[in-house]
Amino acid sequence: MQTVLSAYAFALAVVRTPFVPTEAFSPPGSLTPAFTTTTSKTTMSHPTHLQASEDENLNYEFAKGGKVHPFEGGPPMNIREKARQGHAFIGLSLSRNHSPGEKLANPDSVSRQTQFDFNEIQDRDYEYFIATNDDGWIVGGGENGDSTKLTNVDSAHVEMTNVGSFNEEWGGVSRERIREAMSQIMIPHIAITPSFVMRNRDVPPEFELKFDLEPKEGVEVEQWANWQLRFVMNQLFELLDNPCRFCPGPHHMSYVRKAGFRSPEHMKQYCEKIDGVVRKWRERGPIMLEPEKDPTKPGYPSEPLGSELESPGGVYLFKNRNEPIEYFAPNFHPPYDTPEKRKIISDILDKEWIE
Image 1 (cartoon, rainbow, N blue to C red):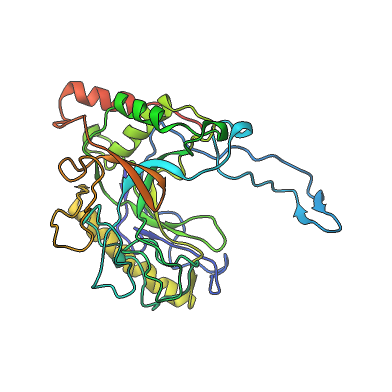
Image 2 (cartoon, one colour; image 1 turned 180 degrees about the vertical axis):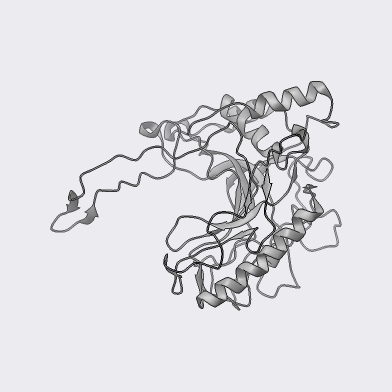
């Protein structure tokens, strides 16, 4: 495990200009993460895309498809020829209501955690940003529509396993089969630690808060940051072998898409700011997500899913990012520092998936 305490250690945000800044511009320092982690044996990688000759194209008289190469085939689903992408998944809900404090936040957002204020890494006043996707800021309370962005509740989440849909004819998996799988796996009390912020490869990019598995040499496995996420994912991958199954960029929370900055200098200032925010969160250490429990507070889950209020720290089944529909409470309880439980954790984290 290597930690380098320098600017941008936790803010890996090199974006392209309108300012979507171009590839030619980069903040001071290296584009290589200053904070690095050793990956586990579990490997998640995109499949090799189909290749075509450089000059082959799909330009017809009334259909301008452009060059075939490089072929972009969508997410790396389990059995491509039988899959149809959907947006149902199993993961964490990090949504939170920020009304009335945040004037543009959606008052209908549900507080399924109160431990993080993700507005600390957003730019609601557009001091640094000049543009975002039409859904605006998708965490930190979401959007109430007054900014002309799409009206959306806070949909902050971390995917562990994307199952596509609940329709088996589309390569998905039924809710009954999901419940059966969830009853067979061990769900620990999940405590998370943000790793760093980075941009993805989209053009313009989206920004993600990463929750990487962080192995440390000489440190026991139950003390590795975010081990619980890979622990649950590996068990689900073994039990759910449906065609659409995959995990997008394990593991992250997207918070803005089609990001554009006012200038390279504004991007630099933004990166410096969020570096400090993530550093502060890391100093706090792993923290378990707990929903709002005060019925008088905005965002209280007035229609709770299962036992989420009494037994927090588990995982949710989502129909899509705006609709968590079922909750699965922890059933693998601490302490985790016994020889027996360390072996269970290590054995599951050692499983290898090439996706």
